[in-house]
Image (tube, rainbow, N blue to C red):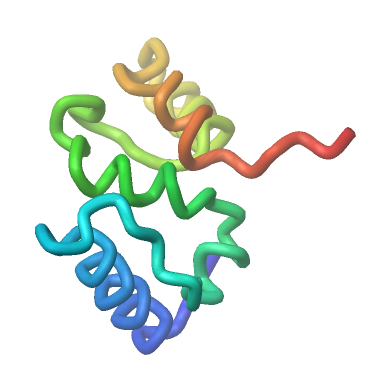
Length: 94
C-alpha cells in the first residue's frame, strides 16, 4: 500500500512520543491514520519499534506478501514470518 511522506512522518513522530523514556508504554490517543489504513495494531507497532532486530533478519511485511516474495525467489519462508503474521498482517475477517 502506498502512503504519503506526511503519513510516514506523522507515524515516526507518534512512535517517538510513545517510546520516550518518561512515557514508556503510554499510547497516545491520537493514532496516526496510517496505522488504521495498514491495519496494524498500535501496540504491535510499538513492540516492533523496541524489538525489531531481534525478530527480523531479512524480509519484513505482511505474511502473505512475504510468502509470495519467497515463492518468487525460490526460497523457503523467511525467518520472522510468524512475527510478521502476528504483528503486521491484517486481521482475518470473521
